[in-house]
Image (cartoon, rainbow, N blue to C red):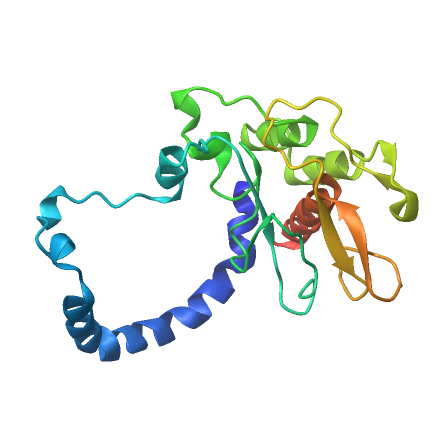
Length: 216
């Protein structure tokens, strides 16, 4: 899943220069406002003693752990109106996460491979692990993801339902409400219909990997 980064590189670059310009204009005003609004107890702290936590570290402090994450990507015009209460979403094309291995830069739960292997969350996460370790090519991962559906999902036909789960935090009991205008619904209908989270996440991964196989 590490090659997902190509898909969003143009999007990231297009907004970067504008952000730099805005930052330069607002920097001095922001500094003055921050100084005025900072509580005295915080202003008295030595900046050298303050540790800035990244997302995995903050999750660890909150007791959520950092080995597994589940984040869906929202893409303007493709699944803008899809929603899932209690699920994590991002507009960042690099932000897709599934288990300990699924997602760009999320190999082994965000850890280097030589620091120990994190157990995949389920069968789909095992495929992501095999891809990251070089046992599955991009095309091989596409083929494997397409073959994952193993249960009757009613309206959706065959869907993926994990049969063996190593991470109890995997949101298997939650639904994504898929708009009739969504790319990931794949069918014509009006309104919204519920799709189990693992199947929706599988469809996002499959779409992303199919796009990657088209890149030179």
